[in-house]
Every structure is written in structure tokens, then in C-alpha cells.
Length: 493
Ligand SMILES: [Zn+2]
Image (cartoon, rainbow, N blue to C red; front, side, top):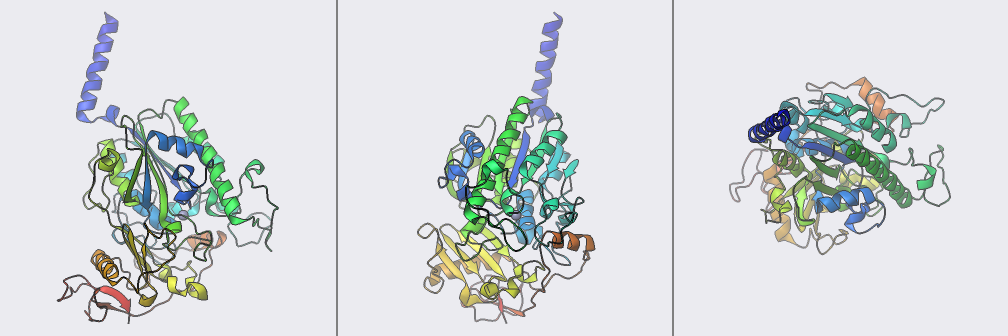
């Protein structure tokens, strides 16, 4: 008798929890952001087999998005979009370092703040400084294991390169997750992995490529870039596998949404650049894998989607109402095999106003100080307001390597995308001043220790023109063109 009563009571409780959307019904959420991982180095994307069996296994249980793009090629900016569902001009975190403009404003809802209000235990475990509390990412987290306060110069070293004391390798990060997550459910866990970002913190010997070790003048390992990049991704994947096995053994993976993406990719000299901070496909085409319990999803979605779509997708599947004004749209329809309205993607790099971008000091990168991208698959425009004649337009379906610039050739698509860009108003018309956010000596020191050298920013003068003819002067940033009715385009005066 007692047993039947207990069973009935449990059923009634489960029924009410399900109906009220109470904690019992809420799925856990794991968001894994892989720093500096291009889509084509995740094996299920079909180019480099055998590197990422753990990610491939997740993709096999969920949906792999074939053409997901991030909003920037620099860590804090693109992470802000993932965590808020907002484009850069809306969340306002635009640069890595400046007197202001590098911090997420306090009133912008984040996944953590929204899910914390719904009763989630919120935990973040990070692997490097650029996603630390210095950038405002700690809000809403009950546990926030960032790399903000553990910075120190390595004993006996005076190097100004990336400092291993300021970053965690994925095995350490995984250990911290296992230690701090706890068993309380539902939980929201954000893990940031970082291994392929640079070559100073290398994987264990058995993962290293079988090539001769090459050291630079500072004693840093400079192995052939592509092999080492692949090795770091392979080791990192083994740690993701270890984490998933641990969570599964603890019963924490059953009712759990898992989303894996990257903040940006990495140039491996495709466009003469072995880093990020640009908006070519090798920098902004990122992996996106979404696995939702109980949903039998479409295995592969080909449509262009954006990392700003992650925020509304997670809330949608968690049964939580998204805040007003989110730029991204839930990916549920595409995951369920339905068609969905086309998405327009935006990305930018405000390198010219970023203390740490260094574009100004490099002759070969002088055109990359301000990059504004609008991407309406397959047409991708990268507009350079400081050097408009150096803008780029590609048909990415026909030209995935972005080798054949059609900007001067295909006027129709160039104009259309300039109008889309102008209406989105992504412009930053002046360098970031010390408004409300004063330069932080601790942050400057941290960035210097990570090898970022502070350069001067540029300060060009701009004017506002019709995006169709780029000649008609519209005077103000907020004026509409009397002819074509669009908002103005920013251009060098
Ligand atoms: Zn990054």
C-alpha cells in the first residue's frame, strides 16, 4: 500500500512539474565554446578525418550546422554574441582592449542571467583571460572559474609572449569542471576551451606531430602550424570525451541540451594571415553542433545560421521565454526539418580602435582596420569604410576560398549588401573614450602578459553617404537617403 501511495505521489508531482514548467521538466544546458576552432578542423565537417571523435559522436546524436558564422574574429566580441543572441552593435562589446567598449553592459540579458532566474544552477569554467569577468561575463553565474586573478609572470622568464600561467589546458579545465559542477539539476554549464589558440601550451607528447621541434628566438615552440593546430584540436577533443563520459556516469547527461560552437576560427595563411581578427571564412565559419534530448533531429542543416541563434535556440528547447529584442532566431524549425526564413549574418572587426589589434603597424594589413561584413548566402560583402575600393564581395558557394573578389564587378549584389549593412547600423564612428569605463591597469598588465602589445589607434574622419551611389552626402549617421530611403553608409571623409 505504502509503495503505491509513494508511486502515486511521485506521479502527481511529476505531472504538476511538467505542467507548470517547474524545475523537474527543465533540461540541463551545456554550452561548450571552443576558442579558435575552424569548422573544417572538426572531423564530421569532412575535411580532417579522425581528429575529433568526441565531437563527431555528439553530432551523430544531434544536428550539425554546415554553415554557421560568428559575429567577429576576436574572442570577447564573438562570445558576447553567443551569450546574448545579439549582434555586436546591439550588445556593444566591440573590442578586446580600449578605454571603453570592451565590456558587456550590465543591463544586457545573458543565458546565465535568464537561466539563473529560472532556478538553474549556473557554472562557468574557462581556460583564458579574454572571457574573464574583466569583460563582464560573470553576471548570473553562481560559480565562475575564470582566468582573471591567477596571472603571473612565469618564474625566471621575461618573455612577453602568451604566458602559460594565464591559460589552462583542456585537461585542467576538464578537471575543474568535474570538481565544481556538483549534482544539482537543472544546471547551465558554460565551458570555454582554448588549446588551439596559440602554440605555447602544447598537448602531451603522444599527441604532438612527428616533426622536428622548431624553436623561435624566445625558446617558444614553432612547429609547422597546421600539424600543431590539428594536434591541439585532437587533444582537446579527447578531454571533451572524458568530460562527457564523467557526466554520463554521474547521470548528468540524460536530460541535457548540449551545444558546441567556436568563437572564431584561425587563419592558416589562406589570406596571408596566421591569426584571427579578420572576417574571411577561415576566421568566422565555425562548427555548430546542437543535441537536444528527446528530439530526433535533422542530421545536417545546410542553411546559413549564426552564433546569435544559439541563445534563442537554447531558451526555446528549455521552455524559457526569450527576452525582448534578441537578434538571433531559434533553430528549432531547421532542426525539425522544416524550412525557415533566410538569415542575414553580420560580423565586424573594429581593429582601428582596438589597442591590441596592431593593424596600424603592419603595412600588409593596413586595409583591415575596419571590417564590416554582411552575408546573405551565398553573397558575402566585407566593406572597408576606410578603403572602400578595397572592399570584397564573394559568392561563397562557388568560391569557398574567397579568391575571386567580385566587388568591382558585381555591382548589384555589392549595392544590395551595402544597403543591408547600412540599415543594420554597425558603425563605430569614433575611438572608444573613457566614458564610464576607465582604463584598468590590472587589465593592461594581464594583456601585456598574454603578449598583446598596446599600439596606438587611428582616428580617421568619416562622412555618411547613400549606400547605392556612395557619393550623395547625407550629413548625419541617422539621416535616411531621400532617394533610396536607406540609412547611410559610413565612409572615409
Ligand atoms: Zn577566441
